[in-house]
Image (cartoon, rainbow, N blue to C red; front, side, top):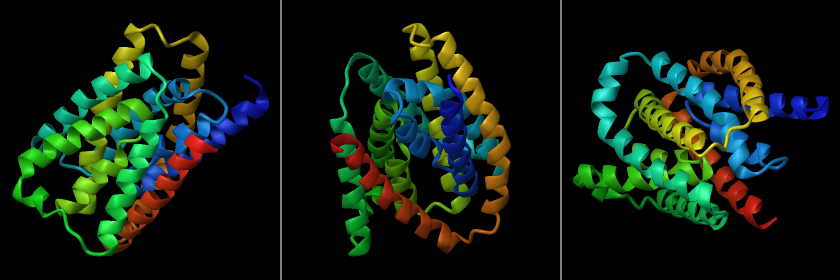
Length: 246
């Protein structure tokens, strides 16, 4: 890997780790499409798996009461991991960029309904069914595109979760989804020596920038936090469509 490529990787991953630390999500959503500009999606996902696992563990632990969070969200986590299994298998077997457009459409629909105050009341009325639907869909999209946060955040916001709950529930889902991907990529012999080396480099950058982001998180209020989430969802939708057609 030449110096320019190393500089690009470290800059992108450092920024993504900073964002993730400050709002509780964002590393795979930011890092994956930007890394994929110089490589393919599969490689971009593999480069971020190990750093992702580290980020998820730190983010979960930073909110405290880890076992309580696991007890509360384990069903959603299980459904997400199961969906990630199928999404990753699909990613390994096929090239399907159209799924990014479908994900972008789901985000747009959510943002429109939120603007016009249309509520997904069925989530509160049918919590178990909504866990199954959002868990499986989020996991599948995460396994396929490395972007499961938007659908998980839709569920979390509509469920009335606090900032801390959103951070822990989404990161628990990310963590087990990444573990599933790690096993599948390893079994399918997709990891190369260069990929492992590059992933280790990304991990070092993440270790430096993630704590800085976590310090910023303390000064973001609940109201501003949810506003930031919705703004980022808008940019993510645009980026996903642009990456597919441009």
